Amino acid sequence: MHNSLWQTRDISYSGCAAQLFFFMFFMSLEVSLLTIMCYDRYVSICKPLHYGTLLGSRACAHMAAAAWASAFLNALLHTANTFSLPLCHGNALGQFFCEIPQLLKLSCSKSYLRELGLLAVSIVVASSCFVFMVFSYVQIFRAVLRIPSEQGRHKAFSTCLPHLAVLSLFVSTGSFAYLKPSSMSSPSLDLALSVLYSVVPPALNPLIYSLRNQELKAAVWTLMSGPFRKH
Image 1 (tube, rainbow, N blue to C red):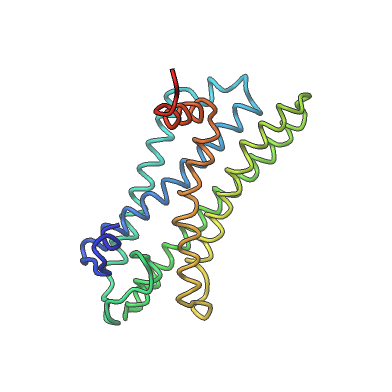
Image 2 (cartoon, one colour):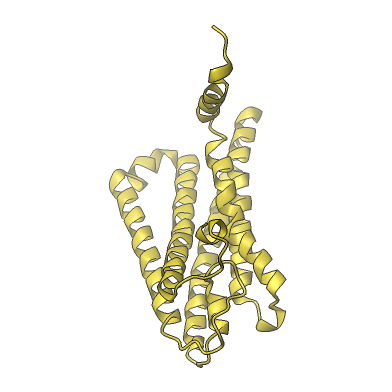
């Protein structure tokens, strides 16, 4: 936002490191929290009688703490490892933010293979979370199809499918952006992939999680139409 408002493309070394850290932190946290939310839906629909036991306040606190701690550790490892590499191929990034693949292109050290290994581990963990979520949704859909009410089935599907669609976009484009071979790299493709996994899912989150809430929609409508109401 600073670059857009002040019409500059420059960022300091420390600013780039901070941007990369927070980007990796929130991206990792997003995957963890989406996995926890999926597990919550699975238990509430498929094992409702065990919900209080499996997802009590203590269990929720432990899962939230684990999500934040793992995201912090993952971001710290990637940031420290990336910025420990000597950068000798200029200082121009072919991207609109400090992204690991673009920073690795500036490195002249073979140590970048260590960072690629860390990225591969992170992608495997994210893919495992995605497989767990798909499996959970299969179980959820099987349970939903047994609901006798058509309205109930429609409500359950309309709640789950948008979440699954955005998650699929996030994981597939993010994995491809970080694991694609260098021979397939091009400025336009890198930019398009980065927009798809870093901009589109967060932009759709309010639409999926908030605007579907009838009470919130009624409150927004009241707020917007309030000055024009006649008494």
